[in-house]
Amino acid sequence: MFPNAPPNMARERLGVNAVAGAAAKMGIIWRETPMVDVGIDGQLEFVDSADQATGRTVALQVKSGASYFKSGDGESWHFYPAVKHRGYWERYPLPVLLILHSIADDRSYWADARQALRSPGASAAAYIAVPKQNVLQQAKAIDLFENAGVSADPFLPDLGDVLRELVTTRSGNGSFPVSWFDLFAHGLTNLCRSLYYGTDLAMGAAEYNLEENGSQFGVGVGPSEHEFLFGFVRYLVAQHLADVDFGDCLLDWHERDMQPHFIAPLTQRGRNLVALISAEEDKRVTGKQLEAGNGLRVAQEGYFQMVERSYIRRWPRIRCFQDLLRSEYERERPQAFGRAEA
Image 1: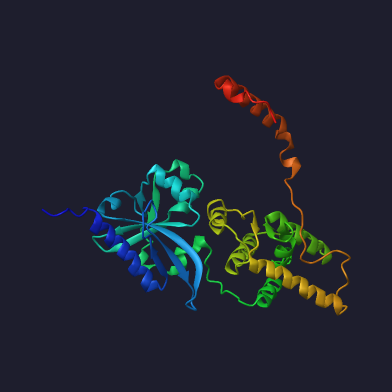
Image 2 (image 1 turned 60 degrees about the horizontal axis):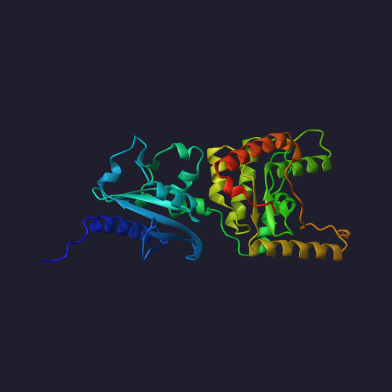
């Protein structure tokens, strides 16, 4: 009598091996989870065109077998995750690619499970849609890593080139005179260690530049201007200037049809860019091309705050609601509210 091999062992290995093979063909790094698997089978790391490992990483969960292809529609397969996996994947610090592997035709299909679970309306959907067009064996590596911030934009090692591109990249609309440098410099906050981004920032810069240009017209914003603004967000990520949650930005951009709104810590590279801007400013002050700022700097923090008028009318309602809940909680568990307030 010999021990029995688990019946699903071979099936699972076929799926994992398919991922490893696809990764090898794409020239990216596959790291299988070597110990206990609790919902993540491994990770993929993006390798750029110069064969450099980038640190841009996504996690994978692989499911193999015919049972995963019984539910779906014309466009996608429907995967019904367990409650424990829904919470686990949604909270995971990396994008989580769900891979469904069909043993019958040796094809694997993929979707970003974390992005699906974070999207608006996800709580009402019992399944994750895995598009039938997302065939792993036919995918481009860059597509798998979009939510991790990988883009087709080339990385510029020289920060001088980054500064040049920020300054020279401007909106082509005369009624929206904004550059990417405007967005970067105006958005600096938290002792220049973080960057704020929002449409209010862009509108403020556009209004000021219009006035300085002597324009009699107001700010004009359309689809091309929104593409220009979101291009700045992509650039921040592509150049590793700030730790932007790009997956969340894409939810705003694709699912909500709106610009993202965030405060992101600058990376060391982003802080080095701030230092470069200050050095370039000093050169021009020394050369008498720019007046001394008397305490004002180009790269200097700006303060931000919640706009009081947007929530002040809710103060009485918030107080009333809180008092009602507190009274209910005290009636339900009076012993828990016996401590004197600090």
